[in-house]
Image (cartoon, rainbow, N blue to C red; front, side, top):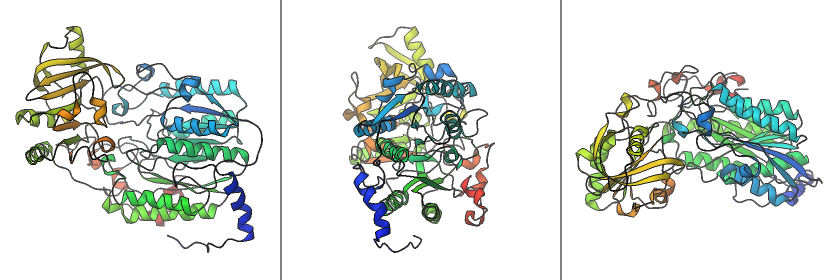
Amino acid sequence: MRPRRPAVITAFSLLFLIPALLGCEPSAEANSPPALGGGDGEGTMRIAVARFSHETCTFCPGEDPGIEDWTRMGPPLTGDELLDTGGYVGGFVDQAREFGDVELVGLTSPRGVFGGTSRTWNQEEVFDHFVGQMLEELEAALPVDGVFLSVHGAMAVRNIPRPEAEMARRFREVVGPDVPIVATFDLHGNEDGEFLRWADGSFVTKRFPHYDAWLQGERAARYIRSVIRGTYRPTTAVRRPPILTATVLQWTGQSPLMDVMERARRWEDREPGAVVNVFLGFPWSDVPNLGTSIHVMTNDDQELADAIADDMAEFIWRVRSDWATGEFPLPAEAVAMAEEAIRTGATPVVLADYWDRPGDATWTLRELVDRNVPRVLYSALTDEPALDWIWEEDLQPGAPFDREVGGYTGEQAGEPVRIQGELIWRGQRFGYDRVAAIAHGYGSVLILAPAYQQNTAPGQMRFGPIEPDDFDVFVLKTRVHFRRGFDETGYAPTIIIVDGPGDWFGTTRLEALDYRNTRASDFYPFGNPRDWRDEAPDRWTGS
């Protein structure tokens, strides 16, 4: 790390340390900024809360989702209904209510888009509709003392290059220059310095899988309260080392990304009031602010903010070769590896089709069926036409099933696979109104979903007659989130990440993508970007 001033406690420094120590709320984890958590101001503060989050795969097939796609999973959340949700909002609300001097105003917010991260560009009408509704309610609720936004960072909207920053800008127009705006983000966000031009702070998950969404919400609540009370004056710094990676490579449970996030937490522990965020980027959103970035906030100390941001960016750049590339077995080799694990008793096995964003790819399914691999739970294959057929024919559990499934979104998905078996369950699951389970082969079950479904823990698949513990192999459409329930718990001793047999979207081969708003060759490891440290500041901060 860059040398800092000696850690000597002087009378001058005590003027800042004592109020911070006395006013700081206890943290759920050590990486909570020590100096955050309120001040000695008085009176109740009103904070507006809104949520609008999407990780957009602009290269995915299908029509641009509209308002009807954003309401298919249920109407928008209103008022207390929004405040009672979990995740980032849950953490923020829980912490804010503990203070006893915060009144929360829930603004009507969409639940999520049907198909989730498998959906392509959002229509501009969607953004204008939901943000416009929030702003109308906000204007009616004025005055407010602060605004909390739960966003993602990788949303893509037609004609709006930086949706989260634009959302902050529109909120800023309503609340004026002096009301703090703070947001929580997913670490897969693509964020340059534009968001912090309009907002006062960002809090980004440091773990993938995202165990700390609730925690980041809590931290955001402590932070915004401190800013409102005037005990924290945000200064920010942004750095953007040109690294572009597929999300399968972004697991923070292994080095060097584990070390990157620990370095961020160490800065936060060492420097009271410092907040250090690392965005790893989302490469399947074709947006101009694509890639890796660092956001740092400090309490009225620009020199410190710049020093931390420089250190973090330089460290990430130094270890880039150890996390920005990776190779994985193709389906035939992966299934052979699974068979060997079964033979040696190293079960259950996870076969993770990391690259299959739509969820209908059949390459791994075909290998399993052709090799007659027994006791496979495939959860889940996207096939809305097959579900339409089951419901139109009114098939009930016990009915024979003989139909080709999957493989309908293009060449990357492979050919449909014929499954002969028995329908053993149909009903509502995973938030969808229609899901089905087909028993086939030698003790295997295929779960069909109407859209992309990323299952991350065995318990999600324990329904109807299905008992996950009865299976030797799980096929999951997932990259890293599955590690939460299958790997880091010790449930599955054999983990196999499966690659796709082609240069398609979703794979690590990002240079094959037809980017329109940036170029893969401007990033490591797909080109030879110039040394970002020698560029003009606005080239690598995005400011």
